[in-house]
Length: 476
Ligand SMILES: Nc1ncnc2c1ncn2[C@@H]1O[C@H](COP(=O)(O)OP(=O)(O)OP(=O)(O)O)[C@@H](O)[C@H]1O
Image 1 (spheres, rainbow, N blue to C red):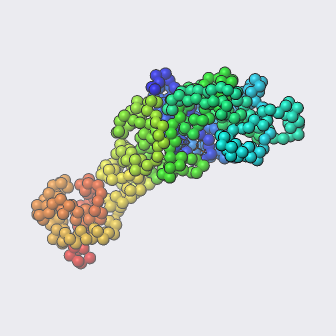
Image 2 (cartoon, rainbow, N blue to C red):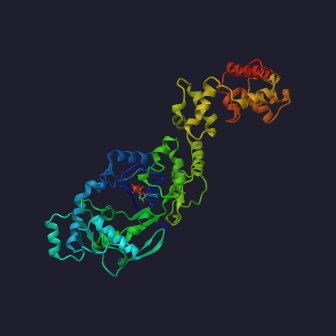
Image 3 (cartoon, protein in one colour):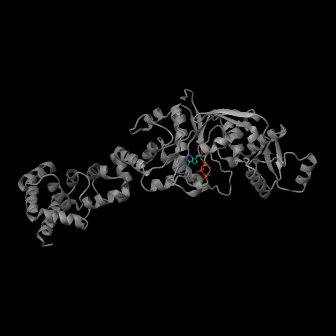
């Protein structure tokens, strides 16, 4: 279903931990749905769980989303026409709407203790029935209610679910959905401690903030009829819903903040690039027509609600690494140098820096990988590993004598030099390049030799070839 009208979407996380890849995927899809349709993307912080929420997690959540490249049009730190964007600051709004439900006779206080609820639940399960609130406090008389309230018994507030109705809606991902209200027990909308429950505050906020599409994990699919009942009772607009399959970790269970799963922070610390994550995430639970790299504009154009999928998507780091390579290849030289800056020595001339970046970038997945090549180019050659020594010895001292004289005679491109060495020594292919690599870089794999050697002084090249000659002749 492609939507031509602008969509107002939102990402509504709780600041109770670090955002993981599943959260990030949901945020990205909401962002794309809004941007692709010329609509608005709202960030709302659902911090009603005071015990688990923190300011620190909220700040980090902003940083993580911005790092990922998702900017919001309205939110706690940028404001907007629907302030406040933190649920803790919206309590009065919830009280006002609760009062309306109350006035319509659609709520009642519930005095059942957790222990009582637990017993009722077990009895229902034992009888093979789906657990739902048994309605104990629904049928209290006014006197019984007043008595309990006066005695100071803690009371939650429940929504009175109408009997014998069907709540139906067309989910963008799952299609037609029908829920009988007889299967939905009266549910809590305000807890005994005074805080509003997710079902309530989340639905009220979506309606008041003008959200037209609620795109979220399919863990919320069965919450939807409850939320719709509340909105319909209050004559508030009901958004469209799209419930996308949850992202699963390697162990097959859904990623979750409370388990500290695959956080964006960790992936960032490990050197992953945000554009790599975006390209990976947009293909989890959403199919793209293009298999190739998507820049921001192409990703917006590719995104289509009709391509959201039902199948649970599993995180696969090999796929993420594929996009990481693509992302590194696309960094500008300056951005690449900033990315690897922690590995770079000081005092390197600007022209050298650019050449170094281009010489090594295809061999770098993470910034730490640059260290080896920084040492090879700007430092002393590290101690040669056994496999390099073997290759050098196999080539023999004469090979390096010839190589030294060719380097001294030809000041041209490495290709010319290598051709000349090949002609004079009768070596070609790996037989030619491996001993050169071993002697000049100490490593048998890596970036093209030419651009790398162009960064070494002729004295340094001579020194390394001399070292190899001595190794090959057994004098070192
Ligand atoms: N594994 C997941 N895959 C995809 N989306 C997810 C996943 N987990 C949560 N979401 C979505 O992220 C949004 C924010 O959810 P929320 O802040 O409750 O995250 P959470 O990881 O479920 O946190 P917690 O572990 O604290 O319950 C919701 O739309 C939710 O559906």
